[in-house]
Length: 139
Image 1 (cartoon, one colour):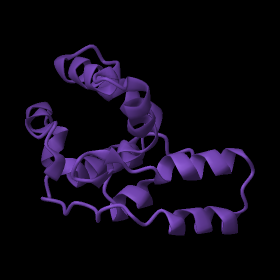
Image 2 (cartoon, rainbow, N blue to C red; image 1 turned 180 degrees about the vertical axis):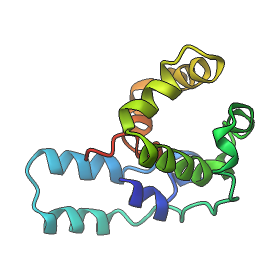
Image 3 (cartoon, rainbow, N blue to C red; image 1 turned 60 degrees about the horizontal axis):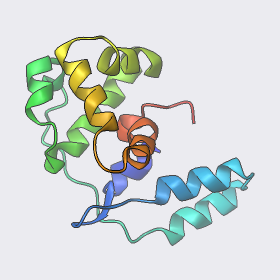
Image 4 (spheres, rainbow, N blue to C red; image 1 turned 90 degrees about the horizontal axis):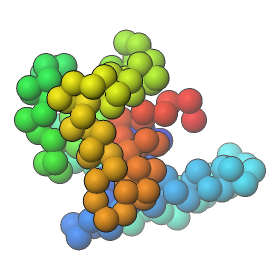
């Protein structure tokens, strides 16, 4: 899933229509799709915008103040993706989820709220737990 967001934007267009490659691939995977079928489905979903370039901020994001500084700003998506990828490489996805969502500090409270905020929290939750910085690398 990370490779999808490394190559394609999380939104299909500037009006914030979600990138549905993740939904499509996970659904047909769950239904028993072969590797060739998964690749074909991925190839059919090439209407997404290109990924956003990084600003080389991933190292700074280990500092909670720097981490919070860029939240909610689309142009830093790739930096957060890199940050969370590195965090999971150091520990595990479970530890990262506990640290960033359940630690009960200001950062975790903010992130937990953001995970479930909005008019369609279940839909945004599927993207945040499956793809944002590949929080679920077990796929």
